[in-house]
Image 1 (tube, protein in one colour):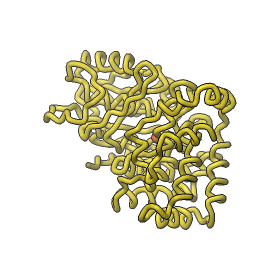
Image 2 (cartoon, protein in one colour):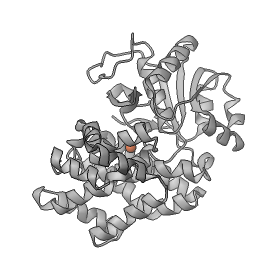
Image 3 (cartoon, helix red, strand yellow):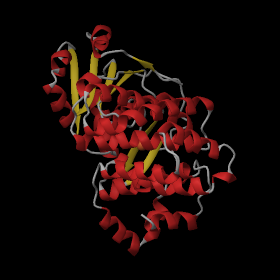
Image 4 (cartoon, rainbow, N blue to C red):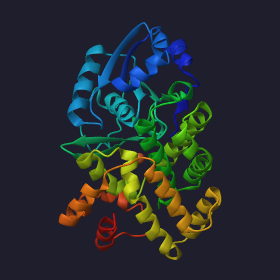
Length: 360
Ligand SMILES: [Fe+2]
């Protein structure tokens, strides 16, 4: 199921200017966009309620508050304007608006519902959450992935003009997420011709513009990156992610490492296993060959160098994590999302997983 792109933000005004709108956003994002004069456009929306989220990751208790507020306003349209967390909140709010309670397993929930319209406007180039049917939700530091075909937004809108020159510390982790999601989607056992078409498109753009974007975030690289992230989102919507995502959630919930950087902690390690054992799986060799050709490299060592350079673009304190791993590696092994892990092309048993954790 694919949603439709609204070409620009003025179309939203033209189509929905006089409708009741509930907008979810973040304070920092909104202040940044205000400097770019986005509020002069939003002022044209006659019946607008803005909700500012506070949490860094989608949080169960905060979602309950948002749903309650949204219910009170009974809007025609819900808009998510922000990064991955805001987009997930918007998707979840629309989904749970008329549910009795917030549930974590919603796969089978497919009653035809009179849903509100949902428009997502990502302000970071990364998660591609505007094109997926799933959302992340944390409760008591535990991460849940909620998936339902009705979660996909009706429309999305990409706004490179507004989000160029975004701060490096904000822009880098989502850009890393786009890269990891692209590669993981190619690797995934669920990849299809269609998903590979999206992920190769994304990788082609990333190979040319990712480093430029991290360094400059000018209009041309931002334009390309919003597209790459969107393709990556469409790709994982079909294939789902694999090992690096499966292991990443503990780094975000326990150490507050931004999601995109958290997946990079083990991306290289999972790929090395896949590469070393690529002869065991049909098509895996072909996939690596294609990745190398797009990235214009000839060996896995060169591939590792690219990933190391990307990791260095966002510094994290890994020493504390390593210390904790030494003390209790099983805590990390047990935290892994098994549903994501099984999408890895090479089967990762507990022993291998422990090896990965120990080599972080
Ligand atoms: Fe991700």
